[in-house]
Length: 547
Image (tube, rainbow, N blue to C red; front, top):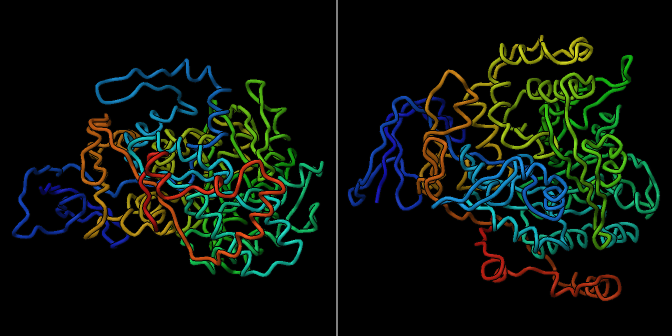
C-alpha cells in the first residue's frame, strides 16, 4: 500500500530542503521519494495549502517515573479541573499541568510530536518509569539514567578507579536501566545534601572528596569513549541561584572540549546585577555556546501560569519550597542513588524575577546562532506544560507578538532586559531544525527527524495559517510509522511507540564489585535490578529499538 502526500512545502533540514514543493510517499511504514513499478498507490492527499515536517521530537520532558506520579498526586486539583472522557478511540484521563499517561500521549500527538524523552530515570526505579512510559501511547520514548550522585560511582572516583572501569560501569547501567543516555543532576550536590552540606559549586569538595568538576569530566569522557550518541546531559550546579551563570561556564569547561549538553539552561543563566541583585546573563551563556562547538543546550523556557516543579535536585528543590504555590512540597530519596523534589509553582508576569526568567529564555533562543545546538523545551512541567510549545514557537517567529507580550510584563524587568532590541525571528526551517532534525541527530536516531528515503514515516502536516500558534497547535495530519493518527488536531487512531535504548559494549567483570555492593548495601539483588530485553517486551509492554 502506498500513500502520496502531494504539493506541500517540505521543510527537511537534514537534507537541506527549505520550503520546496515536493511529493512524498509512504510505503510500508517508511518514506519514499519515488514509487517503484510494484508500489500500488492507494490514497493521495492534496496538500497545496500545507507544509510538511518530520514528526517532532522532545528531548527533555518529564513524563515518567516516581516524581511525575508524586506531582500528579500533589496537583489533584489540576486533575479535577481538566477531566477527559473516554471515547471509542481514546482512554479517559485528566490533567493539564501534569497529564495522566494516556492523556500525555494524546496531547503530544495532537501537536505533531512522535517521540519524547524522559530526562531523569532513577536506575533503581527504571522499571516503574518504563512501565509508565509504555502506558503513554502515540509516541516513541526513551530515558536518560541518573548518575553522578550514586554511591557506587562516587566511591569509584574517590578510590581512584581507572577511566576504563568507570566506562564499564556507565555502559552497564545503560544496559541495566534500558536507557539511551546519561544524565547528571547537580553533580555531587544531591549526595552532599544528605550530609547537610547546603551548597556545592563546581570546584568545591563534597563529602566523598570529589568535586563536581571531577564527576562531569569523568562521565563526559565515559560517554564519549563508549560512543554514545547523546552527550552527557547535565543539570548544572546552583539551579535558580543569582550568579549561577559562572557555575554554568565552569561546567562547560569541565567537559574538557568533549560533547556536553546543558539542560534547561535558562535556569542556569542568572547574574547578580541591579537593585534586585538578579539579572540576565543570557548574553554570556549564548556567547559560550556560540564559541564552544562541543556544547548543546535546551532552554527550559518558562511560561506564565500555574505549574509544578519536579526535579532530582533535592538540594535546590528544598531551598525553593518556601515559594511553593499552593503551599505543599515533597522531597524524597530512593536507595541513596539520587533524589527527588516536587514543588508547585505559579509564574507571574508581574513578578520581576519571573518576568526576567521569561525574557532570559527568549534571549538565549535569539542569541544562540546555530539552531542545531539549541533545543525547544520548557523542561515540562518545570517551566511550563509541554502544551505551551505552539505559543513559544509564535514568540520565536513573530517579533511583533513577542514585543506585545513583553510590554505587559513587570516594568522593572523590561528595563533590564535586551529582549525588545532583538530583531531575530525564527524561520520555519529553523523551527524544523530545532524540533526535528537536531534532536534526532543528537540522540542518534538515524530513521527519525527527517523525510529522506527509508526514514520512518513519522510525518506532521500543517495547514498554513496566519496565526503560527494555531497552526502548530492543531496539525492537519499526523502520521506515525505511516499510519494516520491525527486529523485536524484530533486523534483518529491510537498506536504504541517503541523505547529507544543504547547498548555500548563493556567488560562484564564490572559485575563482580557491583554484586558485592548490591549484597552489602542495596535492598534489591543485582539480577532483579537489571531489566532484560524480554522483560521490556513481555512484562513492561514496549518494544525496544537499539540506537
